[in-house]
Structures are given as C-alpha cells and as structure tokens.
Length: 150
Image 1: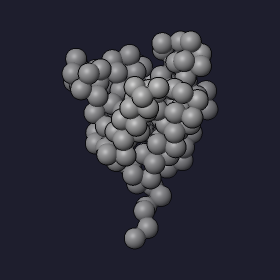
Image 2: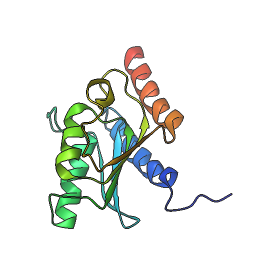
Image 3: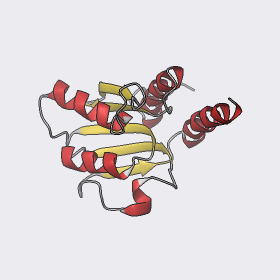
C-alpha cells in the first residue's frame, strides 16, 4: 500500500528526516517541517548545541524560516509537524505565529506543553499527537542511550 503524499504520516516522516540530521551532528534528534497548501515551506532540526543557544529548538528555527518564506509573522494556513511534543517556549511561538494546526510525534511527559498548559496554542489551532509515535520516540531513546554508553 502506498502512503498518501499529503498525509500526516508522510510529513512526519519528513520531520523524522530532519531529526536524523540533528542526531548526525550530536544534537538532540528533534525535527520539524512546516507545510502550507500541501507543500513543505520550512524544514529545521535542533541547533541548540551548534548555535550555543537554548532557544534554537527545531520549531523555533522552522517558524522563522516559514515566516521568511511566506512573508508574514502569521501562519494560520500552515501545519507544523514536529517529532516531539512542543515545550512551553515553542508552544508560545506557535501561538504567536497563529499556526493553524500542530501535529507531533511522541509525547514529552517531562517538558511538553500539555503538562503545564493545555491551552497555550492559539485558540483556533488544531493539535494532534502520537503520529508515528514509536518511530519518533525510538530516535530519542537511541540517542540518549548512546550518550549514556559514551
């Protein structure tokens, strides 16, 4: 069976590709893509170590890139796909940019926004979690397991 190229799973796989790029440069493997009209308009992965910047999360990098591409700070007709549930900071940026829909892979019970504030996203935003959850979670588990061994 072929996967619909416009499905949540398809775009989450693209976010997973970004997460792998992060892992390749020893960044926590979190990846993000932003989609508008069924086309990816921004791709990003964590760059906190590379940029020595605690705010350089995948979502923050992707929102900046999408805003530059679209030419607006508001992204209501965009969908953000990210491999891990956004933290409070990223959820705040998602709210301010008015992203219309957020789809994340695995849940983050420690730092995910839902633990602290379930209504932090824009009131009109649709939020879905658990898309390719096992694949997204495995990336993080493998990364941190390797860190503990080394």
